[in-house]
Image (cartoon, rainbow, N blue to C red):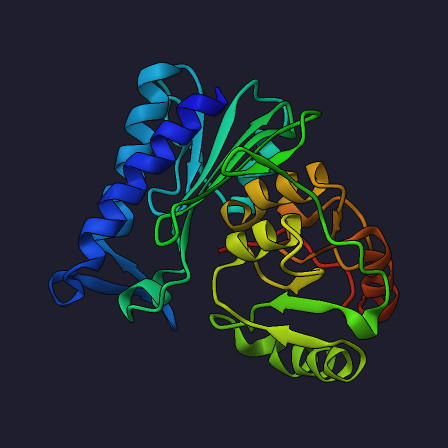
Length: 283
């Protein structure tokens, strides 16, 4: 199954790379405030789904642009992404897909975006692929078998002091109701850490945590396709993931922390009291 996901990710990456050569020709539309979609997102998603359902026609799909949760033979499910993931907890095989994480970066020619594909089996993410077509970096993980970057085993960093930690994050950009609380967290961690980076593609941020390029990560309001693959990469690389209370509900709420075991624990202690647990993400 991992090889099929890699094939799908590389096919999507080829579409993205071709389009990046002439961004002026790419058609862009706005889904909502500060949330864009291009014809390339849609073409890449179709390519991924075609590869996966050709190999596994009975598997279910949850993808960012089509938003469906169905097999090739079934009807799409309705409801929020978080609710769909919860409803599919008993599904034997659910592919969770982000064909182009970092669309805003892509349309501006900022080379920080990726393809993210995860397989969830009975509520557990078991396969993960994150592909950076700019650098030809392929991050993969299989549950219980470790995480790899371009066929080399990767591990989270050994840093355990917050004042030495480089953190990744993403500002709220669609729903600004949480911005003030987020800025308070940002202010706190700016003073406590070695630095904070906001590259703009959560899936790739999580891959960087797995590879030891970042020591921790925090973000609110994410969707399942942003974090499913990255969550497995981090845990298979020896790190921890959870919501702001350290609980395993991040796929449903969209609020996520990740990091080395020591940094993760400190993030929970620092940020948990500032951001209470929320209900499942809606859109």
